[in-house]
Length: 106
Image (spheres, rainbow, N blue to C red):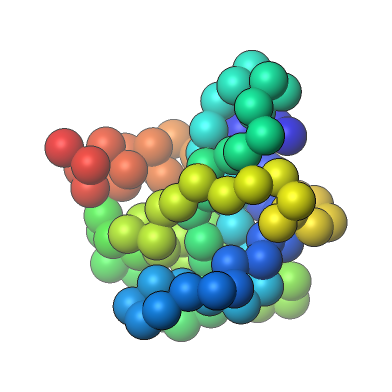
């Protein structure tokens, strides 16, 4: 799986405030690691606005809805949880997501 890919991911078996259900997610782990490991790291998306940097970032329209990356929802998932690919973030949006991740995680 390529870094920056937007995929359907099954995030079920969660408890609030964790994000659950099948929803688009952005793969943020490195492409080389993704090829070797049985897991990837994803940032789930939501259609609930607004953008609140660095916690929520507008990333485009996926699955027919404006999508917002929910940075605090970052998590590692098994590849078996991944479904179809919906698209790929642009370099600009991936760079903005990286900035938000860095701000959130530092």
